[in-house]
View 1 (cartoon, helix red, strand yellow):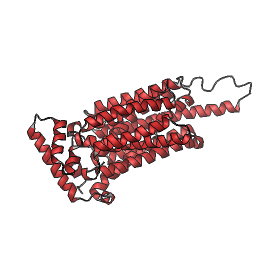
View 2 (cartoon, helix red, strand yellow; view 1 turned 135 degrees about the vertical axis):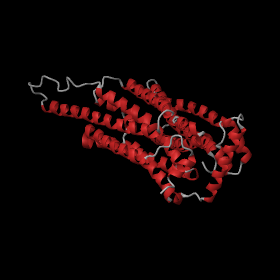
View 3 (cartoon, one colour; view 1 turned 90 degrees about the vertical axis):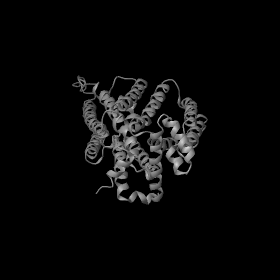
View 4 (cartoon, helix red, strand yellow; view 1 turned 90 degrees about the horizontal axis):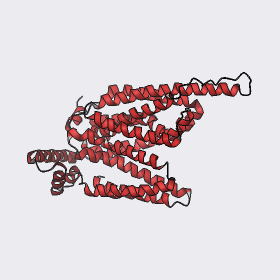
Length: 397
């Protein structure tokens, strides 16, 4: 994104990865083609998250930065809902065909959008940078436009004085926000929220919820979408930290409740297994079990997790990093997030087999509890602060 620009990276590389991945899946004649297609889709998603969050921060005004940053997760939730809904009627390769169609509006949208003015000024393309800024801001207030151009030029002067490499992340004023962002991603991924989405049908079934798999998927998609809408509403009215803390602490409570529900189910299953074939076994141990509680806890957990940490983390991490290291820092953070997400997704079934569903959800609860404490004491408030003011927070002793 530094070499070719934010817009071209999204327009050419990202759409190319998605398109080639979905074509491979659509035309697959062997499992290897599906796996390669999924790998290319994963790269496409990595490009989207790493580049779009930076692009939004660079084109948005300070007052709209958080609001627009929420759209990364909001539109992702729309995508989940579309796929879960379409999955009720289409098979996997037909879904791939649908996704090829969805690449088209993405390409059209990015073709219309301007390049990041900050990137253009960093490459010495001042006329193009001013044109892009006028496209974004309009020409009604020349003084405000000129003031923003001066700020961007000053930012670029500072950026040129600092050589950008991975080593730069070791500087104290950069290492602090970088580590804060890394640990936020750590707690979000280890909270198991993505697992709850991927395995929602299996979890609903195991919890004895009286809901079909197709309906369960669509309901989960709707909850994710509504939670993002709520986040967009609250982020303009409340501080970032308040929402993050409420999100992680709420997930802690939901996981403890889920752990308790699954402990009761596991205990009942053991009791039924021991008494199988016995004439004394006449009463179902789960006869009075509140079957509505597990699905409710799951939906509340997804609402709080996605609407809080899941949405705001893309805004906060992009805000925390200084402009001159934002590209490389954000890319490393996204990469770390994907690695952690992979580990959590792959270990979920192993954890269920080793310590049971109750133990697994209590483990996630303890991680969320630790994440709550971490957020309270170490994550700073960035709402209403300019990029320069945020950078200044970490320069103080």
